[in-house]
Amino acid sequence: FAHATQSFLNWLKQGGSIVSTKIALEDLRHQNAGRGVLAVQDIDENEDLFSIPRTQILSVKNSNLRDELKTLLDDPWQSLILTMIYEFHRREESPWAPYFAILPDQFDTLMFWSQEELNHLTGSAVLYKIGKTDADQTFRQRILPILKEYSDTFKTNGLTDEELLALCHRMGSTIMSYAFDLELPDAYVADEKLAMGASKNAEDGWEEDEEENEVLPKGMIPMADMLNADGDRNNARLFYEEDKVVMKSIKPIKASEEIFNDYGPIPTSDLLRRYGYTTSNYAQYDVVEISSRMVMETAQEQLNLPHRACFERAEYLERQDVLHDDYDIYHASYEEGQFPEELCILLNTLALPKLAFDEMKNKERLPKAALSTEAANLLSKVIELRMSKYPSCPPRHGGDKRRIAMAQQVIDGEKKVLQEASQTVNRMLQPHRSKRMADTF
Image (cartoon, rainbow, N blue to C red; front, side, top):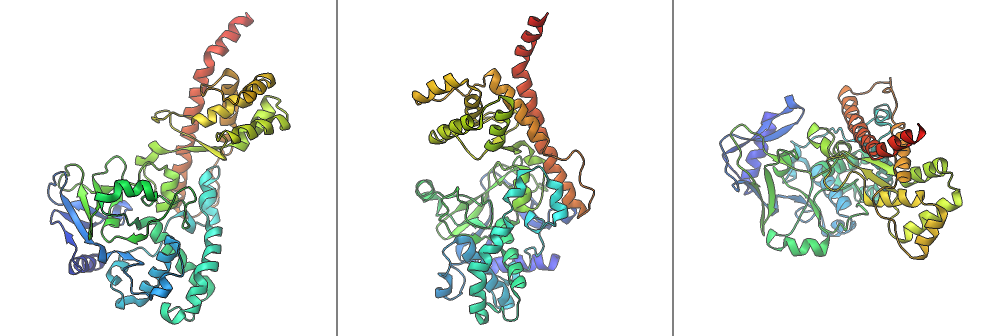
């Protein structure tokens, strides 16, 4: 482990990278964190921690894979997977051999969990985001045929389809956990991001995210991907320059403190799915997804709303760009509100009397987002139903203990979101319940 680390650092310097003497790449396996970057001296704000020449980035452009093979796939994920398989099988002939030596060959991302282990996530919407079946299909249709036709180039002779598929998954998971979008120099990023829809390693899977206008090539930036992430303790940021990328401190860092990147505000479930670990520092971003189907089915039952009337209202909201497949419920402390405005409009619309809905529809209007009493009651029932989707007791069947513990952390976090949501709705309804009790006596 230590030898591989030192060989990697030597390789960095030989390739023109500059690493500050104030930092060190350390073994953090005792913290279940692999490697990490620590300060060995006090660091001021805006100091260069390391700089990596763009030529040392593992990317499709920098690889000497034949140009005609580079252009066979236009998807940035797939093309980088193909390139990494080529470079990985070159072994010591590859310029990135010392880099591959420190990259993991086993992963705890959900793509690699057994069904027994995934059962511990029952109730969480993250189970529907893993995408292993779609990834398998994409690999079989797009990448495996190339690996077979050009097996001499990729050195894949004798490998079975399952072995090739496993290789694709390994590289795909490496990209998901470590790759960056290779942005333009910072002088141009502001304008170009608006024009190109740039994003930073925020994929929902190994295929292009339909919700993002993904156009930038991807690359593995040595050393930059050695930083662990922490939303609260983030103290470094990667800057893109013309011929290099530079990691800079964004606040003073004391000697012995770890240097952290930040993944942005992602929930614990996505942290586990994308990167294969959990931490309480991202619990503040936890969400619970509520499907519009669940809301409408609950409305039909609780409000005696006929199916046809429910469908008519859903159709109207869809034309108004308010109806979505799912809505996220957040912590009570979330700055933009615990319940999204579109969800509140859906609830209010479903709770309207028929005449009121018809009048609103004729005027092409929408209800306000503030929940009516009837809508709040409906939301209370929806939250109760959503909570029931989590098993009352964890599955008895086993699996890796660490994975089970991480799954439980996800479930506990989501339940807390729902508990807070229930408390909020109960507070909304308390005055009305008190009034009904007073009117009874």
